[in-house]
Image (cartoon, rainbow, N blue to C red):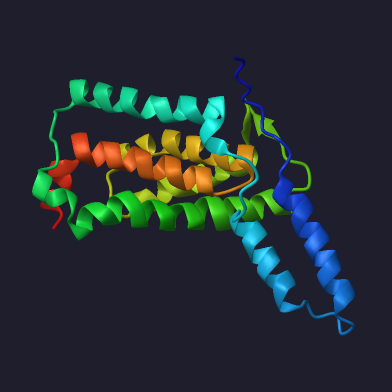
Length: 199
């Protein structure tokens, strides 16, 4: 089994341009039809499922890194698991489902999607696209609103992973799944006390 970390061409860009051309041809006034606008928004957000990401070796490797990092954090910090009664709380569901969904749609969907479409030639730096680096920087800055500077800097690395799978698959679904998995493990094993104290 050979791992390839090269970013593939974004299928969403090809689909988007074809949809826009078809939409403009269908409307004589030059105004895009509703299906074309919807197709444009869906392509920008990365709402398409090209291939099964859950079988991809690079995605599986990033998934396996999560537990390794959690156990390292337990060793460095302290094991502070979330009590069982708090697992079904709205706070836990918020940080494990809703926040990853919202953050990925905003950063990997809108910001990174727009940067991917606006840059005609996508440059990479050590296998990471410039749009991923810019988006991850903005993602870290956004975490300054509710976290310390050191925590916001630590968020940069997982953000690069989320952006990498967004680039690799041309979809936000893998980044949403990875983000939710990372948050779930962190708050179950390490950040449970911070979650309880924030209420």
